[in-house]
Amino acid sequence: MKTINFIILSLWLLTGLSALAQSPAVRIDSGRIAGTKYQLAFPKNWETAKTKKLVMFAHGYEFMGSPRQSSSPRWLLVVQPFLDRGFAVAASDYQYQGFALPQGVDDTEALRQHVVKTLGQLDTTIMVGQSMGGGVALATLENFGQYYQGALPMCPFSSRPYLQCRKEFDIYATFNGLFPGVATPLTEIFDLSKPYQAQPFSAMQEKATAIKKAIFAKDSALAIAFAKRYDLKIDDLPLSLFFNENVLRDIAQKAKGNPFDNTNTLYSGFPDDLLVNQKAERLAATVSPDVIFGKYDRTGNISKPVVLLHTVYDQLIPPTYGVVNFENMIHQQGKDALFVVKYTNGQGHCQFKPKQVGSAFDALRQWLATGQKAKPGFID
Image 1 (cartoon, rainbow, N blue to C red):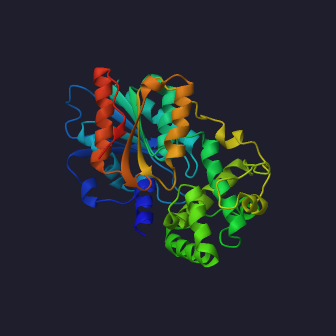
Image 2 (cartoon, rainbow, N blue to C red):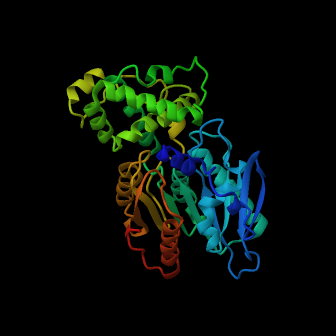
Image 3 (cartoon, one colour):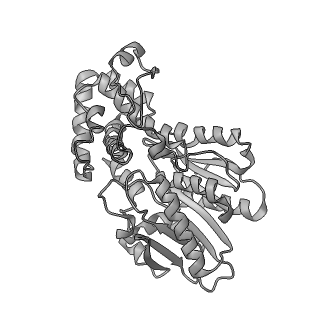
């Protein structure tokens, strides 16, 4: 389960080298704003530097009840490339876990204001985020771009939030139609009479193994084709279902109902589309999607340079959702001159090497320094 272990590292930032957190090259301050904990890390000699540089960092999705980012200093493993380049890094825990994109934007802006009030005006402020935090980064630039010079969203939640989460809903609806009894029905996921309890990480491997065994016993060829339809490798399909169930249950609780409606959806791209549409689990929406997805909905209306970093394969946010949909919005807004995509050969969600993150960040910094647009393309 190497992939699962890496996903945990990427999303919750809780795995790393303890020696890194003890590095004498950084100082870490912490505190609370409106009850929300934050961390502020400084590279060596930041106070005496001629220019004051800051990265506002937005973390990814956390299961409800899982350890918070600030519970361990190991999140420095992810932000080390920015510290190495002389940037202080500020990061909020957000007021709540789960789907917290709008709250992440508000809490990040509150923290930025606190940092400016405490440290004074900065020479350079760059917005960086990973996974759902990448969506926070883009929404921040769309709504508070006047305070930033640019942004580096990594493997970002960059589609409209409704569309991204609707993908998770559709995977379940079609999977339950083709492989009934293997995964949790949507009717149960959106049953508010049952209290929500996120599945523990310890259950991930056992459940993923059971799902894979069940679907291969039923129809291995269909299972492989189903995974391909949703841009997944077959080994990642059980993990995707595990993750999506937690996300959908969390959304049901926060929205106080089901914001999705697939009663009129015509599914395609399967070996037998007629069968899928006849068998798919169908639910009508019980609440408006705007209840949870309306605030800071994606627009593509950016005003500062963005370098978006993505892997060629991502089992949670495929390039179609992480790059293509946002690129189309950028083009519609006429902001192509402010948008560049860098990609790696990473084979998993946020599977970047530190040097790749550093390279993308350097490309953005060079763009800001010279005014010459960064070149899109592959980062080795």
